[in-house]
Image 1: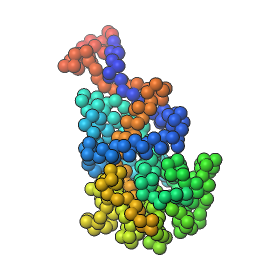
Image 2: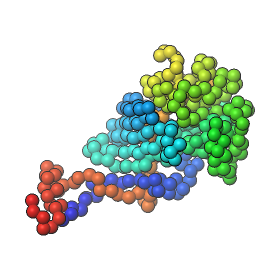
Image 3: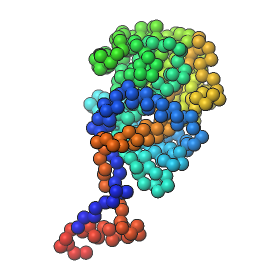
Image 4: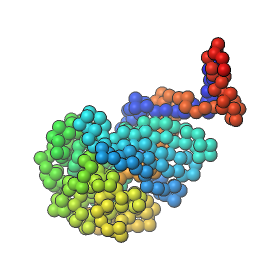
Length: 354
């Protein structure tokens, strides 16, 4: 006989298909803005969160990470990998899944795909930082690295800051062509550029999101003029950077969680006491953001667990009353909590002995 699980033992699961349906139901630009707002709201209550650097398992091929946090009421973690060589095998560089749980019982309340959701929350975080730090009236951005993140980044900047022109460059022209094709009709003018240098010319916002795990110099010091805001989001693990250190030396640098960024971000190449400002302090008025129109601001974004928490909670609330979920039986729920074995035995097919 089988045991029918109770409602409390069924966990809402959001599949890739469900997530795509939800994005289209909400609207991708609306969702990006709402995610940016949700992340900002959680950053403003920074002290409520249990904060720690992600747990990483590195190999020669890439990294597998767990990213946990809790605000005392809900607990969240994300499983995520980063394998730059995957693209050569026809696989995603980054895949992820996430879980949200009730702290009071420990019971999961949501299981969700997070490959798409990570791209959305990463773009939303970039936009949240840019509306805090970018020069007023910015209308042109350069997008260096045109892989899986590129379109999300462009649309987040359009929806949040009003970016109208996007200048594209990638070492792989096919990636740039893909991005330009996907942005056609999206309300931005996407222009393919022949070099990173030509892409950044005239841009008030420059986003780097390359994938290679290397100490790379995607931007050199002479490419970055006064007043520019940089979003450096590709350098997200030890041994991986995108900017020449001289850019860091003359920029005001902002991070999510300094203990993690000093190991994984652009600032890993700088001295341990290199000054940085955590974004939550700017949001709460405890530290200045853009101090001068001619200053260079840099968001050294590596991704932090609070952003995943915000995204998962947002999805949990958005799927209510929609078909974009399915309840899955993943928690044992015996009638007597002490009789797990009895539940197992009662599920034995009829006619089988003990």
